[in-house]
Image (cartoon, rainbow, N blue to C red; front, side, top):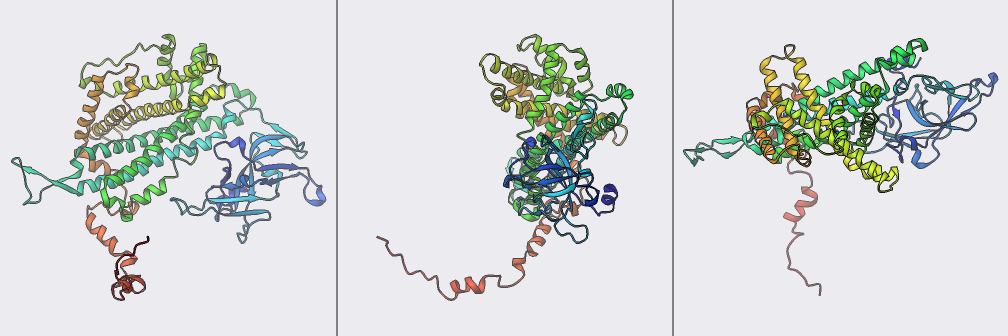
Length: 601
């Protein structure tokens, strides 16, 4: 019934989880769903019903998109209280918020828009208060747990992996956020690179002398600091694309397997379990969480850097960059705050360390089917050497370092080392310093952020390299492969340069090798320069989509800026608004006539 109504746009929904006082701490949600036994056939309530209630101010739902003015139903996340008054934690309930006839609010429901935001104001993020709202018993989502007509709560018996199927939607959303990070970053880079190719500044020299007579000026894209600003972001946009594509495909395979597990009969469960494991579900959770955190941070900061790289004109609304930035800025916060996500990422990866320490061959075999498989061997070696570094980057020349496999090994080592450090730190804080687990965990949170970022960077570079290989000979030929590999090398070198301390501190890389890394960044910026505009154009964003005077496909930047300026409403009349009321009194009326200053003493 509900599916048909959704398909026909009779039912428009929203996901109402976040509250005024609770966001990331889902277990702390205060909204309640209390079961009330049926009142009998005569009253049309034989099965019983739920009472959805917001008991406090902080329990008001706050932030869900479309909740304000658009949706007429909400998937409300609430604390389930069964017929015996026992709280079974958060569950999902479908609550009608508005009439499907005239869109008026349902009895006991108060909804509204939360007001202006930094950006993305076309979305009516809303608030909702529920005052003892009655819904049918069947409006509880009962795939994995249920409450019968007598108010008795029970859970369906499924495998550990299948029990995590509810996380799939969250992980899918995060995978789409990764793809959107790529798209929005590439939009900003397209605007900035096109403008940098048009904008000229600084006279060229001829025969060692500055030539001002012919007004020959440099394209600002030829300045190294401009390239260092934009080309790594260009590489990141392509890199995020390949990773987003892979993660979405991996999630689809896991979803299909989990759905099969959740519906499999007991006789088939064993064989199905061998396909999808709890370890794999946890691993893809770590992958999507770490990548969501890293890619959205880089995209948000990167778009702002693109704006700054366009100088004063980047500050114009007509540049398209301010709107792009403001509409994108929600992403580092939505679907898991970026500063919070490294904690669950590290928690999952620490299970890998634990399995290796315990020598659990069955679990280690499961880890070999996961994204985190690259950590197994280096973590094993580090645990055997008791934290002493026994591995170094054995390259003896700059040319040897300009190799994707060499760079991947460096990222692999860095990620494994940071992970083992976190495990050791927590263990020492508890065993030697007598700290509680909570305090030890809190003390490691900053290091966990480094672990999550390191994990992301290895996955990104690895997926970029593999993505290029997979597309080679299909949609792209060897010339395109060569250019994309140059981007991959720049991406890998740039982030080693940017975070060089983490590659130096245990002696894995030497200061001489870091010098080669910096030289490599310069070399690959030179290689990318002839193809930079083409790589931006290859994104195929239309002028309509970019809405940017600076990023026009035809390069007519200055004409577009002036056309936009002329359309400003302030220029619609002469004299402009405010002349009669204010300026005329000053200029003509003399109300501002200077008569000297009087001492206040």
